[in-house]
Image (cartoon, rainbow, N blue to C red; front, side, top):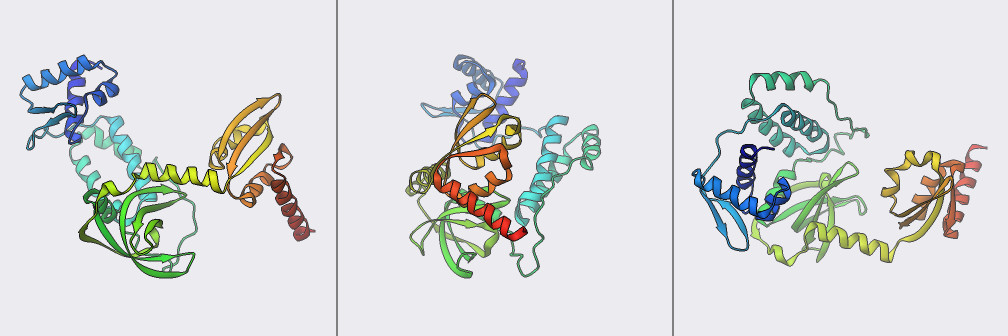
Length: 321
């Protein structure tokens, strides 16, 4: 990247955040801190109002804006892919907001970029295979934007939540700490004032939601990343079984993603087989996975897993014969 392109990119980076540390700029462009200082000084001399806070970072003075940004074909194509993903993996509120944002983006594209996107549009698809929900099962599924607002403004949310476990709807007031997507569903992690503890709420099970004017202290709660890591560590320590299996090398490529889902800890090749060590909480769940691998997999430990597999095999035999 030449210096002119780098200066433009730094300017965009500065406008994208309230404060940007010099180290962030250096890491992004693989340059030294001294070069960062020179680049920032060059922007200041060119008339860009960049301020600095000692020990914190750089910022652009409030009120300054870049002229409209032009996108390359590759950037526009990446945004189109993002739109396709949003259509399948977001809720009604975020789909609408992203669609409006894409309209604005398309409006600033040059004619050739617009033609490029139109030619790609019908040739990119994101498929999501899951049973269609009936009208009675389909909740509003339109609260992600409200939850994001509550997270950004540290506001309490009041919601009517339907618990699959208890099969009943309850009114909750929640201090949200983060959202994440896993296994086709969005989840809200928050401190539930009713239960006086942190809870995991599936967003598509929220029937009604209101962002309250009441604020909460963010520093009272762990970050989302810290909370999820604490949960993973707790599961390992309290519930998980240490599992060792061996699998034939010629089928390892078929489980390269699955093995991480089942809690892979260690992988060691021994001849024409690979020894895998896992921490997993549910032996029945793990046993069903091992059965799918047929005689290409063998359990070393624990004995309880071997027994679970034997029970499943007997159950299948009794069912089919």
